[in-house]
Length: 76
Image (cartoon, rainbow, N blue to C red; front, side):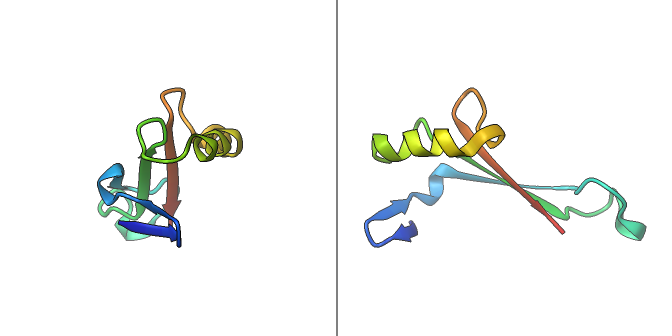
């Protein structure tokens, strides 16, 4: 379980991690190593209170797909 607050946790099985090649210039390592990560979380299927799901849908913007998948990307 991933603890968010004292009363809220997310099951780690609900998180999907993908390691990918980052976009942009990368020197010698370009197109060779995975230097970015993408986290996917299915808000619609998650065991979260409805008011929290609504809040996530409201503030996520383009990071939330039409299918209710929250996508967070990070790279070096």
